[in-house]
Image (cartoon, rainbow, N blue to C red; front, side, top):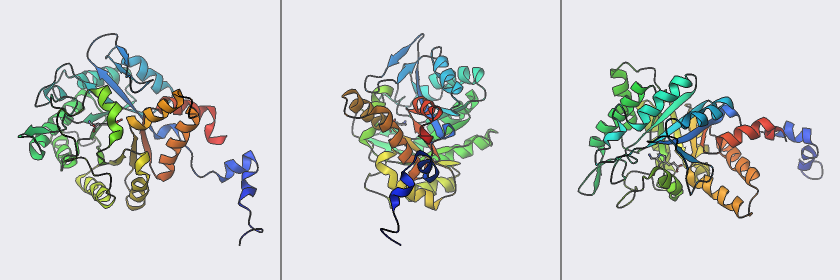
Length: 329
Ligand code: PBG
């Protein structure tokens, strides 16, 4: 059947027809909100390259957490900026590390909220790499030993889920093993399974002071050109025991999200990263984009591509838009 018998515009003619025809909706339950915490008191420092995103101390962060918990956002993911860095990322796993303290204060006040912790070394190493460095190389298996300590210390502090983001081989299996050994068999793991070596992490590295001091991350993060390798990474993380897998960044990799969704049965997350956030903010500031419409369209496209969960700095704004009825307008 084709034109003029078939007319695609018929179901676009009225608001209610458009609602009835709509295939994808965003839900507050889809959203995971990243929050940065650092040492100190009464700190709320805006990240220059991420307007609207702040670094909080463990006292001020509670207000921000309350704001998102009240909106019904089910989960946050925490990133820490330690006061001191060294070659072994010690501050990532000590009992009184910034993340461990942050998790404790947040879980005490908001026991229902899912608090996810990022398991990585880069914010805690003086060289800024996601692993132990020797002779200019990032060592895999030595790094796994540190990754285990980080994950265990975060869970001991009360984290509900851990998310290894360093793209070390075997990280999910290593974390599963240590958590099970210490009696944390019920704690799930979200793997940053297909994480690409992306320029879109730039603003995050400003926020977390985690830019590598030498070289780049291409010996561990993925080549943006690769699709089959991404699917292999995702399958491997599932075999190692990941409960949720992730594609990151999101918007430049919608094809990977779609293809992963068609192949796997575990929940799929996508990370709308800092650069995706800042691009929209910057263009809106210049008056070049309608900010809210661009936020909605970009995030909706990630869901449409197949993401079940979306990590996004826009989470509070999206939650408000969802409540305002954007899904039905
Ligand atoms: C690494 C990590 C990064 C992000 C999340 N976890 C940065 C990197 O790989 O350099 C990026 C998130 C973003 O850009 O929003 N621990």
